[in-house]
Amino acid sequence: MQDIRTLLRHYDGEQSSKREVARLLQLSPGTVRNYLRRAEAAGLSWPLPERLTDEELEALLFPHSGPISCRPQPDRNQVHQQLSRKGMTLERILFDWIQEYPNGYSYGYFCACYKKRCRAQKITMRIHHKAGERLYVDFAGKRMEVMDPSTGQVTKVQIFVAAMGGSNYTYVEAVPDQTLRSWIEAHVRCLTFLGAGPASLSAIT
Image (cartoon, rainbow, N blue to C red; front, side, top):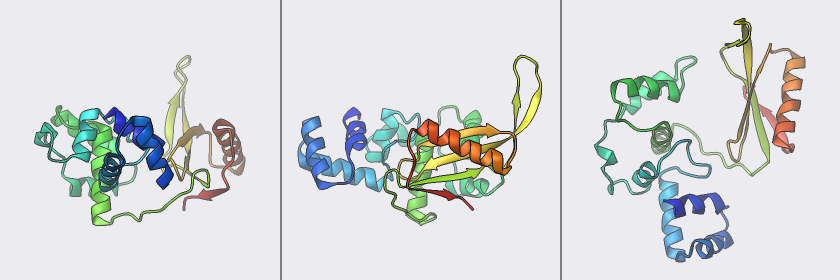
């Protein structure tokens, strides 16, 4: 599985890259093509879902090869309905489900499976992004609370979120409000953190 992780990390979608990755991993071009086809069918690309284990990665790429399919699985349709509720996330749904089924999947594997289902049912539209082309920005829907550990004082904050379209590399920051000043200052700190500026910014509406 480490070879597959390395393959996905280095592959950039070009034919020349396939040959370079094959040489790097000492694999045949046919094996590289096979792995890439399986990754595409499973809806996987780099970076892989967080905390995805080698066993779970193998189960996604080779669905009938491992015992992981014997584990209980959440109802995918029910999950999709729950996600339509305000403030609901996949991590929260999986956390509640794991309380009942401790031997269930990890968060990374569950997200990968759900993404695969969405692709199969065409729930979302596939959009191709060029690396560094666009940064998506928005405030999260619900306010959160931040506690000062030294005083115990609780302050309500807004959550600014920015994600690169090509890699989903994400920046998150708590700001006091949604004023224009907070909006601009959050962008400045975000771009400073990224160390570069995208070709364009896109506010999610």
